[in-house]
Length: 319
Image (cartoon, rainbow, N blue to C red):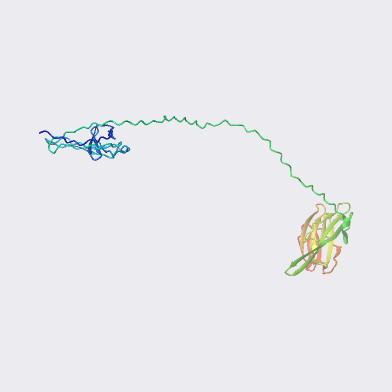
């Protein structure tokens, strides 16, 4: 007897076309539950009914040949990925011949399912090339005229108040004979009190002026260390004055000074080893005791509480 062909009942559901996901061929055969093989490229794949993306890589095919009279060519497939197509409308099973007989393959006609047409979008237009950044032509800046800076307001310098000699008292005896003569004037400008560790110190502040003939009076720039000084703590001060050429030499307290009438500056000042003449008292009135100071050709000699002193008229050095 010939080989028997066992057929299975055919599902009457609408037929669909099963395509190989690797090559797209419809020449496929069922190999098991939801598993199919492609006769065109030899790939195996699953068909579950839900569309699946194609395998990430092409199937790798391993071929093995065996020798023998009854042996045919056996092909084993290893699929790197499984692709699933379409919706399974029916389960296809192919009957196989009994063992020991040549297997006959029954083909089932499968109605081709309508193909879905997917509208494609318009081709993407090429993006125009961006123009290169070319240097822009330089635009000449319009020169702007700076606003004039207002000149700072300068307060007018007050005119020097002319020295009124009548505001001062001429010290009788504090003069140098000559033509014209040189006279020393003074006035009190107040008191200043300083508290120190030794007690309270009160200083009588003074101003001194030199006058010669028709020349304008000269206010001496006196200090605490010059003679005469800008102030004294005692009530009685001995003052001696002498003249030689351009210099007016004054000794008072513990200092001796030379004033230049031509440049109206302090020529030099020297400290004395002691006070000159009377230098004492804490009374209510200030007493300036004047006398004449005798000058030599190039030096002056005077007596102090610390002894006799010789001072050079050139620079105030002792010797």
